Length: 123
Image (cartoon, rainbow, N blue to C red):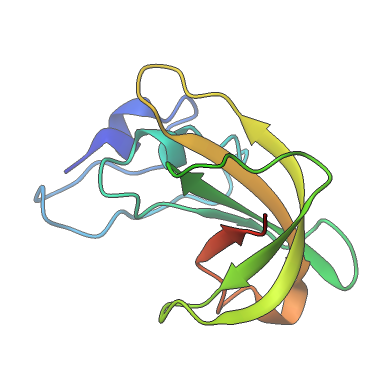
């Protein structure tokens, strides 16, 4: 599908040759706003900001579960298999616009940026 392409305000998501293609990104145009994350119906988009700090990155993830994470709280960071591999701090929870997908920004260890793909709220 292409909601990431049609919703990107800067044109960072390039046009699709085929609707089934993996999105291609022009990183020079990407501002990290996360609109693509909230618009992806498959919850497949995420943004990683490697410039946050020397040893920390920020990952912006789609979130549609309850309870909703709260800013300042610690969450479990999960890998692709659902295993907890780190802890992270929630620094922002962006309200959804047209759908019900929140975008949660979590500070994570930079070396884990290629592994973390979901979070679990610890009650």
